[in-house]
Length: 178
Image 1 (cartoon, rainbow, N blue to C red):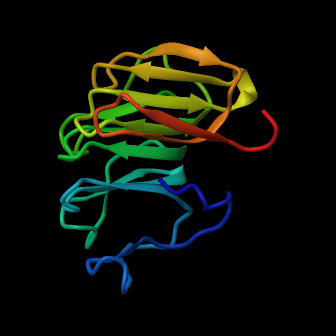
Image 2: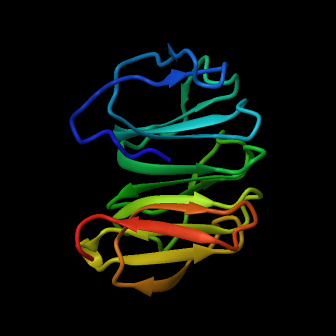
């Protein structure tokens, strides 16, 4: 996922259906978009807004619908290959999950933190999420589609994560000297 949109900068979502040769703006309004994730087919897409909502598209990014009523500082979103499983994280909030293609979202109890990044395996079963240093730099793992999370380690503030399709291999990058 891309995490290039700094606080306060607004823009729109662009989509490409020709392998990136051309791009079209697709959003209904100019918002501070933070991250976007796409299913393998491209049909299901989910984007998050800083100080806003989770938005989903079921038609390859052509139209977008707000799916959450709470305004949070959403920071990262992940989606399974099929699009069925989705996870979103925000600063000073809990982890939110969806198992119905992003139609309904629920908070995962006991996961309140300052989240930076979340990734999931192709099936969605294996997930990793990282926090910033506000409460200590931690990363958490889930092996049940995001329904429960376990602290895996601390002391590393991963600004971004990536994971292999089967969930076995995970890489993260750190900003600064940590």
